[in-house]
Image 1 (cartoon, rainbow, N blue to C red):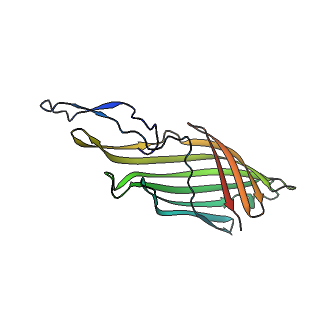
Image 2 (image 1 turned 180 degrees about the horizontal axis):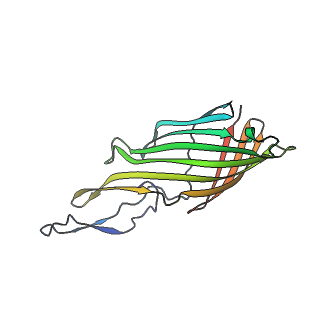
Length: 210
């Protein structure tokens, strides 16, 4: 796997459940990068507002990362304002739906030259935000229902040849609550938020507003 301890986590026993074939003990492959963060710059284009609806598209074409392999990403988000139906609403209310997919592949000259990770997920959320009248600051929060799944398949070398690991996994978290703040400085927009879920996360971003 790409992320994880850079030393082997130990050994595993490989068995084909054939009593005539002895089990084999192999060293598990180490991770390539031990990190608690995973920064990724993804181009995003937004359009709106039409009848209180705007949309954003994220797209990263297949991009090589040194000798590790390549990554590609595609995402789509549509948001609709509910505040337009509430006269003199003190806050901005909206609902949003998103879908995103991510693919990781090995380098052409590696043992895993094809797709290693195929991940995708979707989410539905309700949002509330309030801008400060005398400053370029917006506070926001939301409640989200989400589903995420990943398919993993890779091959690693053993003393007897090669072995293949493949599995599917769905995220344990389905509901998250989020709160954050956004600051706009000329055309630069900065944001940071904190999410409460099965695994609490902090995220930050920077963008250009035209």
